[in-house]
Each structure stands twice: as C-alpha cells, then as structure tokens.
Length: 216
Ligand code: AP5
Image (tube, rainbow, N blue to C red; front, side, top):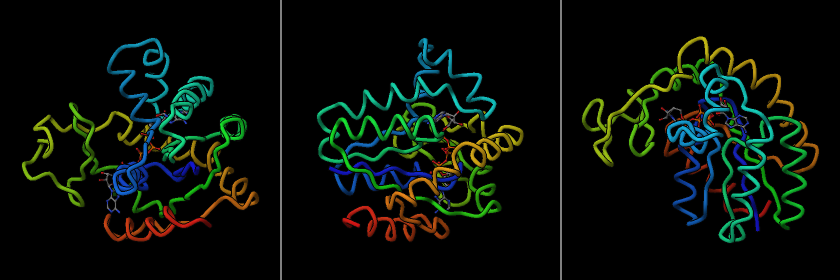
C-alpha cells in the first residue's frame, strides 16, 4: 500500500489538507509536529528533548522523529495506506524512511506543496490552534464561529510559539537548507508530484484528491 508523504514549507497547508484527505480516504494520518507537541504537553522525555528546538524553529534530533515514524508505520492500519505529514525533513530522515518503507513493503508517493513566501507568512501569522483538541483555524481564512473558541470542542485558541517572527525566520532557513533538497531527491526517484497550494482550502483539496487517489 502507499504512504503519502506531505512535503513543503512551513504553513503551506500540509496539516489542514492531511486531516481532510485522511478523513475522505478513511486512512490513518500522522503529523510529526502534532505528535511532538503532544509529547511536550505531556512533559515526556521526548517532549523535554524536543521543546527548545521546536520553540526556536529548529529540527528536533533525527533519531526521535525516525523512531516515532517507524513505530507508527509498523502499526497494522498503516498497511491500508497512511498519510505522513512533516517527515522526512532531512537527508538522514529520508535515508531512514527509504529503509523502513522497504522493510515494511510500503510504496511511497510524495506530494510537494508549493506556495510563495508572502502567502506562507499570511497563513502562519493568522494561524490559531485549539489547546484542547489541536484543531487548526485562521483568523481570516478559516475563522472560528466564536472568536478565540474552538468550533469542535469549545477549547481556547492560541498562537503557536513557533509562529512568532524570529522562529518563522529560523523555520524558513531550516526548510531551505535541510528539507528543500529532498524535492530533487524524490523527483529524481520518480516519486514526487507537485501541488499548487495556493487558493482556498477547498480548492486545494479538490486538486489534492486527484493526486491522493491516483496510482501515478
Ligand atoms: P510542524 O507542526 O509540522 O510545522 P511545519 O512543517 O512548519 O508546518 P506547519 O504546521 O507550520 O504548517 P502546515 O503546512 O501544516 O500548515 P497548516 O495546515 O497548519 O512542525 C513543528 C516543529 O516540530 C518543527 O519546526 C520542528 O521543530 C518539529 N518537527 C516536526 N517534524 C519534524 C521532523 N520530521 N524532524 C525534525 N523536527 C520536526 O496551515 C497554516 C495556516 O494556514 C492555518 O491557519 C490554516 O488554517 C491556514 N490555511 C491552510 N490552508 C490554507 C489555504 N488553502 N488558504 C488559506 N489558509 C490556509
């Protein structure tokens, strides 16, 4: 079965679309960012190791994300297809990912979310997330019905610490240096499809569904 990898700059809409596509296709979904934020919230060993990196917009150590991904892909439901949002993000992660997917007999298709920097900044600066259930909103593009409250559970909406200006700058730099080279790597392997992530959420989703369900 196919692992769909969502690759792209911070704020390009990977998490929003991953949740929608997983629901549509009734398949599993893992967001490394969400898993790590949950570990931080719980104060676990992993969370304590990850927190400072995440706050500053740097990558957390490869061995942590590789292990978390390996565990998730090894669960039986991944055999029916799974979306992996936010992994791999470095060459070392990509090499480990090639190995684990080969061992688990999973094929890989990478969807690259393309978006220009002005649109990314507009999306990140207006993002709000629910403290209780993690649902993601935007003050302009996906506003909650009641300002500051989650539509789904009534939880408080907050701005992520890494959506502050200095952390956003670091995340862009890290993306350019560590993650962007993976585009050429997967393109050369014939595993990459490009998706224009510009446009309204539902319009992007219509385009994504074509890639998410096709065999190419
Ligand atoms: P993570 O949470 O994965 O951050 P990211 O990759 O920077 O991605 P984002 O969550 O910022 O954006 P997104 O593309 O999911 O956009 P979203 O859908 O929210 O990772 C956080 C941190 O964890 C990393 O910095 C790192 O420290 C660590 N980490 C994670 N994975 C790691 C790894 N593999 N290795 C090492 N460290 C790792 O959308 C953004 C906003 O735009 C929202 O408000 C949304 O409502 C809005 N929006 C979405 N689509 C549209 C649209 N089409 N039009 C208008 N608005 C839209």
